[in-house]
Length: 437
Image (cartoon, rainbow, N blue to C red):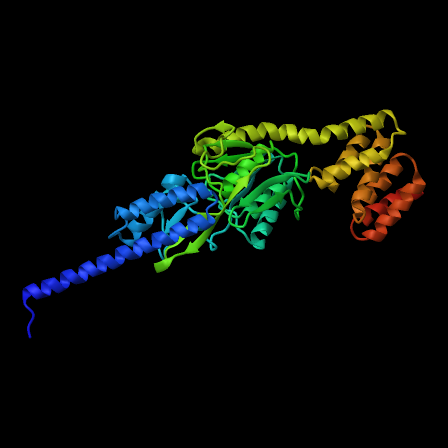
């Protein structure tokens, strides 16, 4: 029996109505799932309940009916954040790297495992170091990357850390980088989770490289700076270890966990909150306030200007104690040489002097006709670099300058044994000359 046009139209209308009804019910069912997860996990229970009441009112009004996936996801994120003002609270499309506005940037969107964490690393004029990190990865590999970065920074007299394009990351890696700038065993942060009533403490930890507890640090920020990047900025600022230059940051301080929903949708729920031990609060909703407010595009030049002046003072602070010790040594030849050695050892470990520079310092005192001071410097160099034939050669020359032929011969012979075809050639010539005297 043939269907009439009216019958066909009725079938189509019924089909479309049923499909729309099913879709609307599915969206509402997903909202119900969200409500349950919020009450169980969201860091602030009162806000979770208030948000759920808001969502319930929207369900009754049919707001989620007939919404496409993308419209539904964007609407949900907007309504979730309307009550909480929490930029870490997000709702995402199924099987999609949904790109939302800046205010809804999430940790998952900020991290791409195929992108390098380190975006830039340079040493500039005046020994200013520059670090640009795209995010804070959570693996051992990423913490090793921090070690490699800080290895380069060992010789820097001021460090600029660029967080202007950093969307966040893992607290443990943030804490690891912070730990490079503190010697004391300090509590830097705590993270409290409501869901399991657990508090995790983040203390200054041991690092693989050399710590820089005194080096001047400048951190650049923008309104994009978010989450873990804000953690670094806020923590360093609160401890007086960095000057923040740039714009007020995004204001997201809550660690987030992603939950799967029906139809492949996902929701990111902040389940914990950061508590700074100094301020007793965090940067949630207000952002990190820069010490120097300036447009993000101009922040780097401002930091360079400040870092250059600070680097000069920082570098001078290392050598002033050495100058005082050497002056004292010149006037009192019986002064304990241990003080000189301890200071030179400190400068070597701080990458401010090396074997050649110490050697050159010793010869400068020989030229100034201060051989005893030069000898003290040469002695210390052999202790710092005992496997270098060159340091022993200089020590031998120091003794020869003081007419101590016996010690000069002793150490020239040592040089010949250590490096017969290198520095040893000079040592042989010196021995021949001493024998003729």
